[in-house]
Image (cartoon, rainbow, N blue to C red; front, top):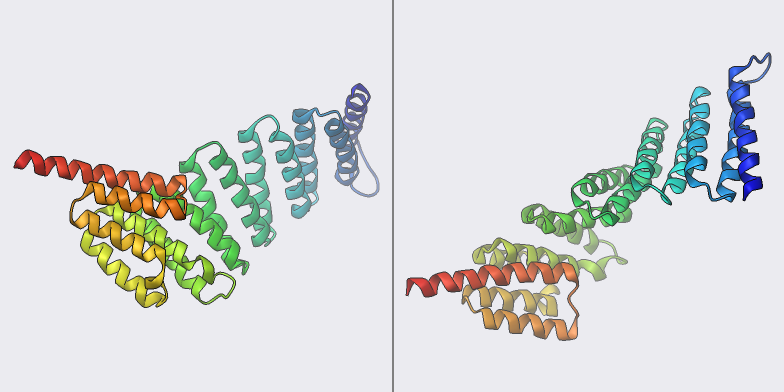
Length: 289
């Protein structure tokens, strides 16, 4: 380890000497880039992550001097991968630079990939507010690059976070849009009823029984097979319980569905919100009588 640190420092010093010196032929930045690359890799071998990352950033700057945006972006990604070991925010900063370099170079799909990665890093930090814009941007860039499936994956993340933040209409719009697109793809058709279920749960959170009923009719028009699914029956029974203001029935319907198709934490959270609103309405009615 100590030997790799020593070699890393030696190559870094040689690179800086090259940059600060004079050269008659070639490019001092290209020569320095080669030395920085060796330096960074030795620091990586020594697991000196911060030092490796800082050298990768210097390497990226060398590539910028010779207008090699793709290589500059790649070096930023290498820096980010090192920083992931020590600082998520520093890793995000490097990935952000890489995204911009890819965009300047017309590499929309590569930019989308690393936008998505930034979104995932923020998600891991449970920072939904900062995560959401990166998934939105990734979806747009994937669509520009022709990656409809990857775009939809990012959109579904945005829908998930929107619902968590009680932006139900935004989530509904995304789930319905993805369901519509998936109907025309044989590989994605299987996911339609799941998307419509999620949209329906968001409708339940809004508490408008008429809107819920209208949505179920629209989903039937969208996919004639949906009314024969357990998901449709689940939503219809929940809507009926809400209309009747019957908390016990709502709980029973949820438990029955969960016993066959286990509900994930996201769906459980939304159902609990609806149940709490229903209980509050029930108590309010009791107070009036």
